[in-house]
Image 1: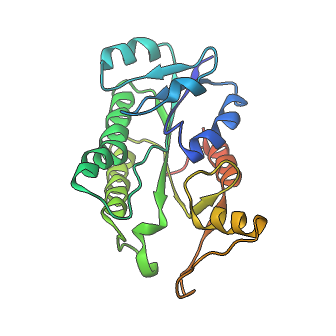
Image 2: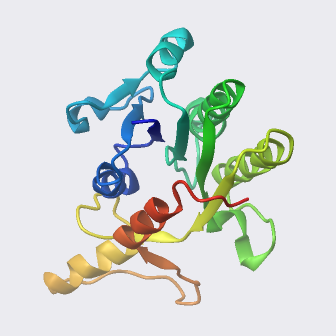
Length: 219
């Protein structure tokens, strides 16, 4: 098998939903371990785990046999309001980790396709760019870095802007899940003005879209 799918954020809500689709693809799968990731509990037999904090030469040893690498970057550190301690984690997951991986695989001519997840928070009040938070500004910075890899390194890039995900096994306490729980248990939810624009997306629909994009040539 010549194809390897490398994914970050496997332990996240979207990552867990995507994993079954990746396993059906027939490609080898490699998971990138974050600082506090518990990815080993999700890894199946034959799947690889990379810790890019330790040794990139080991990463090269384990991936040199693959002709085509498809990178799916899902890892993130979401913060509406951040603390000083959050900044390093946000930079790591939103910018440094994906940039290191893209540059690494580009150097060896293996990277065929990259899928990145952006957020609607980069477009506050429906503007072309207006970051709602520092998190959104970092996601925009990564989108801009992707332009370099697309134009100067000829990397095929799919940058997907995703709304508020919802679905089974969502423990993040987001709005749709909260409303559904309140409905089932006949509870109540305190809401704001009601003027907010919502863009809920079922997590399996997003996972299927990502799986369909892998291997396709989009820029």
